[in-house]
Length: 516
Image (cartoon, rainbow, N blue to C red; front, side, top):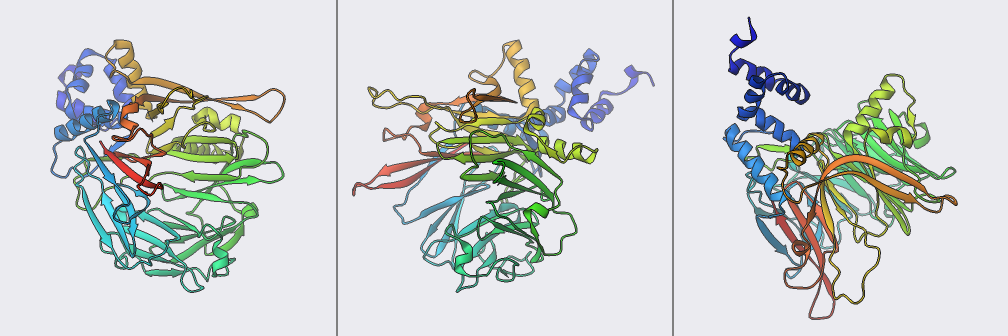
């Protein structure tokens, strides 16, 4: 059949099942193909999801045109820094801020956990608040949440025998998807199951669709299948460990070698045949190991790793799109006065895994793998550390010196989005003169390593991004002349944390939630 006889509807259907690169190339073939792509609402929706690093979700009664409109409205709100709402949480009601997960701010009041679900006008998420009871009045050693599974995991010290509780986030009752509502930790090899084994930090937890990571101290880690309560793997080490789980399959471990003072990101496949055995870190079967940049002498005093959960869909919400599976993994390396944050897309890690699968060396030097895309950010002079969500990050600009003649030196914070499609679209818009005002292109970060030799080593790492400055007046407290001491980033909101003086000349935490 001649090309001119093929109906536009059939060509549109072909484009819809094609990858974005093929769609882009087809637009350059002829005027007809280009017009089909530009005039097709489903194709524009597919392209614009990728621009923001999103994926399509349950339509929830919304047409494709309505979802595309909501996506564009959301993008405009973020890139022009126009929040739809500002909510304030204080400690006047006795609540303590614990953290945030998905679309919820979590606070504690005596024996209750209080969840504030932050509304999203563009993604159809309603604002609401509820509490679950049955917690001690004291501190909770560790807590983690998985919104999609309506799951709250709480570490409880017990009376000499620590355990984790698996609860429904909406009811506070035992989670119906867990075979055991309580998993005792005394049976974990290498852990004594007593208060001393938990260390001074009280332990930490993280959870994915299937896996639960439990750390009672920094030198040990246990991985469970939380749905079956089965212990999969127990890892012990002579060095501190930090971990997260990527795509419910790969365990990402950050650790250092004491003799070489080199830090590593070690990737372990949790789909391996594990049966609850105890394994030394040095004997662990790894998929690959990425050498991390050495930014100063010695080993980090603290190293941590974080990623968010994709597809955060609150129960009962009409969420037409959500964060894609490709996300930024954030690694923090703290060396006292020297600090660095490494931002690595999951796609970079997966390409390294693929290279090893094709016969490459499993231990990859930094100068090799960083070419696949990452950023090393110098956070030594930042007022607070960067935060990430999906392919988006908030990064403070370092301040060199404060002019004491000024009453207030405004803090400068930028919002970055590392979606490759979004960056290419911005470059085209900049060339055509139609880019959103204030949105800029950012390509590299420069880190100057000091203390390693006479001549400082310089890391210039590349991970292209769109960047916009968050207006200083938006960050400034509405009634007080103070900047936030921290900023947290979520898919549809930012949390600005202020330390506000009280009538008793003390400081207490105040949270301002800016919804987009």
